Image (cartoon, rainbow, N blue to C red; front, side):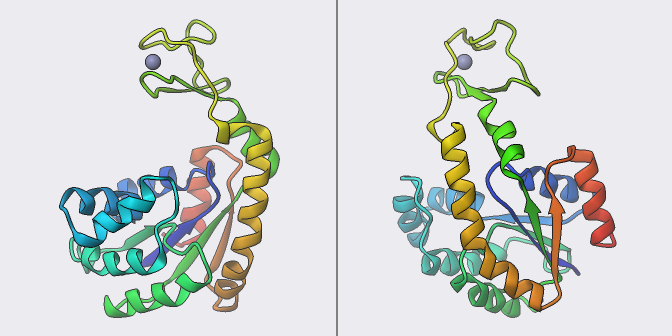
Amino acid sequence: MKTILLHGPSGCGKDTQADLLVENFGFEKIVTGEMFRTMYDMADIDGIKAHETWGKGIFVPDDITYRMLPKWLARFNPIKDWIFVSVVRSQGQIALFDNLLKESNRTLDAFVHFKLSEEAAIERMALRWVCPNCNQIYHEKYKKERVQGFCDACGMKLTQREDDKPERIKSRLEEYNRTIQPILDEYRSRGILIEIDASPSIEEIQKEIITKLNL
Ligand SMILES: [Zn+2]
């Protein structure tokens, strides 16, 4: 049974790629967003604590996330291949994740990192418009609205998210590249780092992943 961790900056397409691996190869997909929502709905004590930070758009502290993960993992088939998304975001989480896997009798086979250039990140996100009323997302290149500047579904004037403006994308990507470096160094030294160029099409990226993971 394989254990894989996908990671990359916002807009790199890692979730789409994880979904394709689930569809094509029957992986169990383990993401913290779903865990936080579900365990909050279940009124789990840590789920409620996580919601206090996560609800404000701040990352949930490591200790809470890693107290929740062992409980969350109990719902996944232990003999299937597992794919985690973005559960190691800081150097401190490397050891926490190692322990978590050890308790599940697993070891990490690959850390798959999606590399996104500044130009590609800006193209993906700066061309994105959102409906403030129904949250539908449009893209100048991939999903254009019928009447320019207005939502197809409800007719509201489209706006751009603060975070999707080029300057913000640049500074976010720089911050990301700075924090990810020690994590990449660690997994590279273990010989399990796989780097994927996140700029080609969804199909091409999936092909590259399949080849590099020997699936
Ligand atoms: Zn709308």
